[in-house]
Image (cartoon, rainbow, N blue to C red):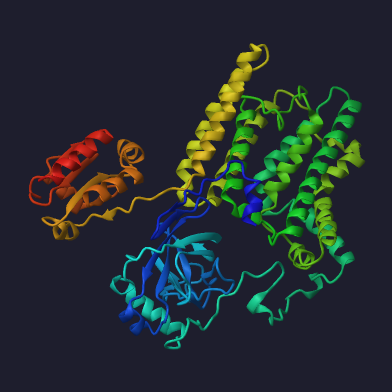
Length: 620
């Protein structure tokens, strides 16, 4: 499924995979989490304590972003269990996965239910069979549900890791998570001296239409008359469901586009011209809507997707946000879109093509959720062969396009549409504001960690659209092409940047107790920062990058702490004052031998100055 979507995405994703002989860390661009593989040896004492005969252990660390959590393998009263399926490339048998117990918490969506959750960095354990000779490559799939207090994101990622044949792999027995591993073994059952055999054996992901462990459920629907058992009823209810979908809250984001289409279709100097124009305009709007439903039919017929799951892909939501924002700028007169134009004039270059793509866009934006009659229709249709899926979805599309087709069949209804005039300029601005509201709706769908970078992308889109608008009619052809290519390039590069995986620096949170414990034994760097400090953010993006900080940690054994002053932090403010400052940014490096004489960098500094300061402190 994910490979399929990569062909739909606006920008190729860079997964930023870094692999070493003993560990591999990956930041997943589409999801608010990171994973890290590590390999360990199981010595004689470790095997005795665990009852395993395995000599090596692969551990996958799963770390949701701040504010996110996932359900445990045993989620308790609610939630989707976290599952890791894995196998060695040298054998087809699945590896046994052992999961730590979750932390009990009130479910965010139903506080009356207690669930078991993984709230932070969580290890999942894969003992390798005793007979497995190193090196060994592991192919794995991680399936979980990432949630915040107000939304959830179904997540599935494919992973690979190679356990090296180096003899100096770290001993598992000495790791801080060893007691957790023993608990995981106890939870899932272990036969001493035998190969791992968990109580719940891993199994491949269910095939399309496979209900897995829920095979025996017999649902009793409250309104059985709306359930579908045959093609005829599915088509009739599909027509009705598609029509009703025009008036559901799902369609609110596109009301402004439909208003534009209605007024644009009514343009014309004479009644005959208006009828001809409105017939062609709404016919191609309907064709655009039906084409999108044909695309959905192909998608549902050959993948295991459900209705609305396109909106689970951040890259697709991002592309829609850019298009809708560009539409709003077009209506405000910044530039003219070459394919989709919602202005109410008669200067459209390709009216039929623009109507067609506008119909596709409005249908895409209006179908992230369901409506009356639709649940039963889709529940039956999506389990049928592709030809049945196509027929039913076309009936839904026909129902949704029926208002357009009605105006095609009865063009005399055009007399009820107002004739364009100077007043439409004000309506254009109003529609532009509605479209910007649609952008806010789309931004709300994106993961929180993408919001700021997406706002930057929209700002770049505004600048790019301005360049495009400068290359209007009468402008030198070569310069016009150069301006337009520059506009497209700016948006493409910015979108690529937004979709890049964010590698996080593992900063420790500042506290007086933690710093005091390190002083005199560790080389410690403390960075004073705040979200309201633009200079601090520039330094984080340019000088204090994850790659540079990792290099300094490896080279000097540096410990790094972050003192966050976004909100009142008296403890951090006291240290800042003691360092002789009342402003940020400020960075202090405490030497091992003379921690009472920290090296301080104020305000702006270069990467060279940072490394020089760390090197100077390391010598003292």
